[in-house]
Image 1 (spheres, helix red, strand yellow):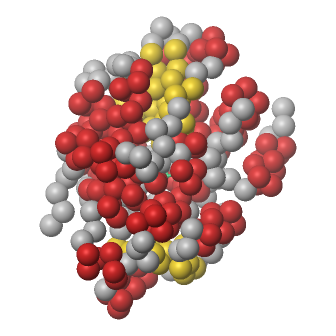
Image 2 (tube, helix red, strand yellow; image 1 turned 180 degrees about the vertical axis):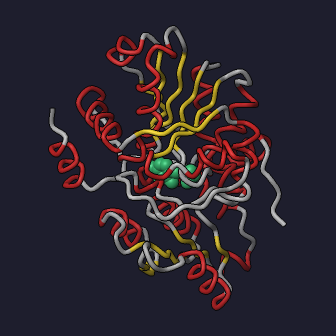
Image 3 (spheres, protein in one colour; image 1 turned 90 degrees about the vertical axis):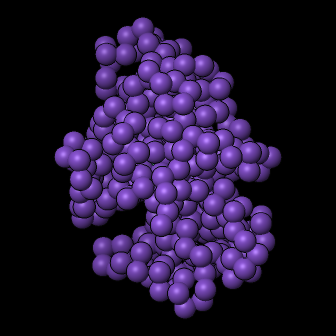
Length: 323
Ligand SMILES: *Cc1c(COP(=O)(O)O)cnc(C)c1O
């Protein structure tokens, strides 16, 4: 039986990934500070190794494998970034990796996963049960399954980004974090409650897939069909059995944003801050921008979760919404 991670686990994870993960920069923008009348701090996990925070949780989880697990290898299922995080971490640690990925995942993510040496198995995200495929492979070949979010070592690893942010900028009044299955949000919640107990903490989902919001407000995990949204890293159908109790306990609210708002943020990041952010990575900023006057005079953290987007897709999204 797996138990809920604590802030001590986040600290242990921070030691394990030190020297392997980047300590990513915190960026600011005078333009956005003026627009919102607030002071924003962007934690740039789009500049993390393999382009997203997922490297943190994956490396932490694989670092804890014993000798038998290392020899047999790891298997996982993922819509992309977790796959790359596992594949890269596994290659750094000399562990064989099998990755179950949706066949319509961005081509850059599939190619990058293969490039890191991962053995990729494709499935249909609207028909197949990826968790079942992963479990079958694990059983047949003695592999250890590391799921994308509902695992204590993954959650603790993801929490190290928020820990670094608070250590660098000090206490915040509000903090906006992208939400898919809740690995990033639950880990960030552990760090937030330890380092800035009075900070308002918000999880942010695509409007088309607000299962997290429904779950948070009803008190039970709500399952939905795979949502149709450009935020492919947040196309999860439900929160996890481990992520949900921490989110319910430590998060202040779950907010939603539209795909159009995400594209506007992609444009802002590229044009004004000179950074490429994938649609899912814009969730936190889109919600902060929406809150407008409510943030006036506050110190606000925004977690930019990733930057992996095919450049052709990036351009297509921007030109379709050209002002
Ligand atoms: C996985 C992912 C998320 C969502 O993280 P969860 O831990 O599943 O909530 C957000 N943004 C990006 C870029 C991701 O890869």
